[in-house]
Amino acid sequence: MSKYECETCGYIYDPTVGDPDGGIAPGTAFEDIPDDWCCPICGVTKDMFVKVED
Image 1 (cartoon, rainbow, N blue to C red):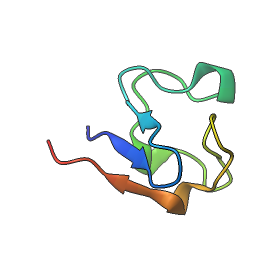
Image 2: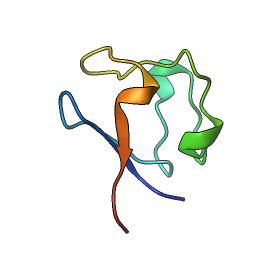
Image 3: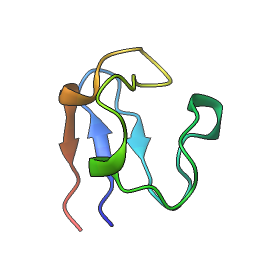
């Protein structure tokens, strides 16, 4: 599973960690996160994230 970076603030979504505070369980691929999920740091929507090269 790939990591994704917020283009606005630089937050890295790591699927092995998830976003427990945002209701996203560890092991959840970025593609499987609901479309209404927002960056836990700056609040932008999922479409503002870009895939981090492995």
